[in-house]
Amino acid sequence: MDTYRHKGLRKQLVDEIRQKGIKDESILMAIDKIPRHLFMDSSFLEFAYEDKPFPIGSGQTISQPYTVAFQTELLEVREGDKILEIGTGSGYQACVLIELGAKVYSIERQKKLYTRTKELLPNLGYNPKLFYGDGNLGLPTFAPFDKIIITAGAPIVPDKLLGQLKIGGSMIIPLGKGSSQIMKRIFKVAENKFTETEHGLFRFVPLLNHKAND
Ligand code: SAH
Image (cartoon, rainbow, N blue to C red; front, top):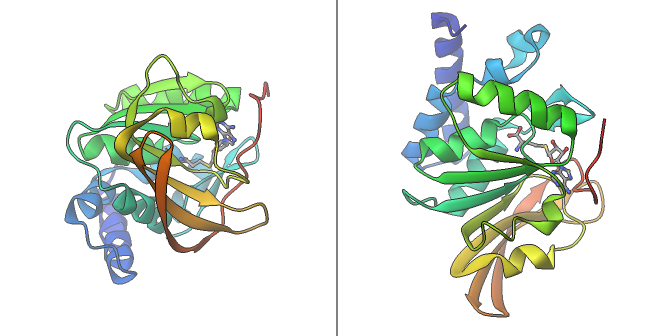
């Protein structure tokens, strides 16, 4: 259920994220609209609108709203963009992209999370294409993508994903082997030709290899 109280808390969250530097009004509108508390366990309802990451089971987290907004801003989403997300998790980031008019494909390696999110999102009116598997491999049958967003800390840039990006497309990836990662935007300038920019330090749960079964 989405109450007036939740809506009020979301407005405060949007103000906080705006103060932290997010300027894109369409992203702020998406955060204002999406009932984040419904993506989390009910016992965490009180915390849903703090600008913090939160546990969602299977040792994973729903990303901090500011981080979701920051990565989304770097993606420069255009209406109709075909976007691949690695790390579906709660599905919240996927819903933000859908609100911006993107066609979203998202991969999750934890079966439980995949199953839960696949059930939840249609009930909220969101219909991304969800896949259970290893995101490092991408989705060769649906490639190429306009954009790719990785929402787990990647030790290296998965080269299969670079191959599935359109020329002129970009990938947003938190890159690093340790507990924090550098947010990078990688542009595909031509086949096998890339340029990149750096956008500060973040902390993500790790991007792992192979799909899990728990
Ligand atoms: N985007 C999510 C946040 C996810 S946290 C949200 O909006 O809630 C990172 C997620 O990446 C976790 O759910 C984790 O299980 C998943 N993950 C880690 N390694 C992966 C891989 N190789 N392929 C797909 N998903 C992966």
